[in-house]
Length: 323
Length: 315
Image 1 (spheres, rainbow over the protein chains, first blue to last red):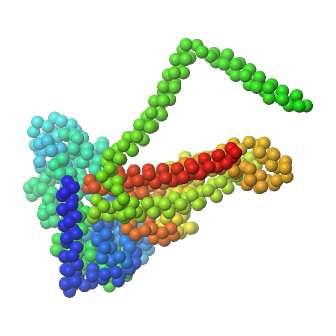
Image 2: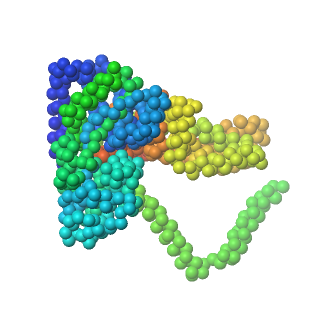
Image 3: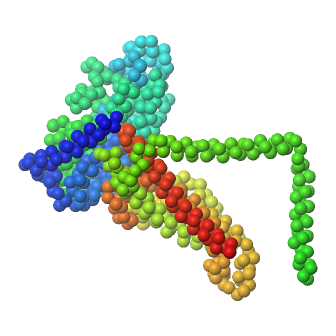
């Protein structure tokens, strides 16, 4: 475990000089300020989702190593709480694991802040079960039968078309996050069709996704949904199910999420930046840095990097917002 | 006259002994059932205390076992890091906590003690507004901390004071949170100063204020310091209200009091404890030990201060 982590750290450390030279060499990368070497200064305040927060922390840390004059702070009030501050002009950027809502847009417009959603990483939710569970693949409809608001299923056998073998008569235990969590919003919308709609008799683990891993690890008939980084970190202790959304079973792997094949539980993670914040050169440099170094940043934080297409879209967005 | 004066204590001692034996005869001392009951009740009390101690020991032992690998100097000298949790530490969070708690002490001691002096020495308790103040203070002591966080956000960070999301706002919010405790403890301490001290001082021609400053406060000081210790111990462990008034989870630069972002120990620990990677959770456990250590250092200084004044008074 530790040695694996050390390797990763060594990998990141090794990548920094490479990134530095890459920034120095590329004509397009000149705008990034990656080679600015302390010329940039100012404060950048980031708030928002606790899912995206760790990612922004890694980006901030790497950026500050190269630009010691810039002070970046990251808070995690949750996507909604963050937007409230963002649209009040109190933060420069907001981490978000969902799109900005109509009310929040209205709030921002009232304060004269125009914002743009910039995709900074990809994420996936995994549906996890105990390794001994005979189920390997599940359809979105079956997930809905289990987690739907009107669900009366209590055993694996109650779910139509689910091949549960000799576990069919066992009652299952469900673990899910609290209603404040972005994971909750995302899962309920993707599986049950409406944000916040879910059966109420599952075990609420609050904001701590580790609790879901612990729960599933210790219960042969448990099921939970957790973000990508959590079940990757858990290794063989839990089994992520393949998801069938009509085109056959798809594993929650890096390739499948990036290609969009892992639907509907793969998603983008966003940073909302305001036009006001991007008047500051340091903020522009930071956002560009965030996108260009997507590979290192996402790997360190345990997410899935951007595709080339996503990267060029993001770069264009930053340019149009800052000009 | 002299004989009479000597007799009076003697008489009252007799009266006390009589009253005691009368009470004992009403309740019946020493039947077998009573003695068993006494033993049982004692055992029950010990059991209750045992549970409380056991819970605390479990936290400490668990944190030590989990956090052992990270109990090193980096924990104090290094700032937070998401890239290298193996060497990351709590420097900025410790500084943030010290700033916030320092501000709390500076605010609650004069205001809390001042309020206690007013209520005990000056307030006319037959007036309705003084009684209203008293009831309010007692109720405020039971308000959940998150409510103070919302208050801090609306009135201190934004609104009338408009300090912004800075350490000073955190200090003020926590001060409001613990102020009732300080006032209540200080009032008890002031009330415990024998009235003969006050009357003696006034009788020798001292003014009301001179009496309070030179006789009542020195006598009450140990009790007041105890109240401050309890309040500060509560304030240093608070995370919820600080999250609302802007304690962030990640600052790599050292904080300052009136500007810039800050973090505090409990918020940083909370952040690390929820991470998927094992290293962060080890770091969180080490942080728990660190916070206990900071608290112990601060409290032992206060206790030393209290004993110092207690001895001075005894002499």
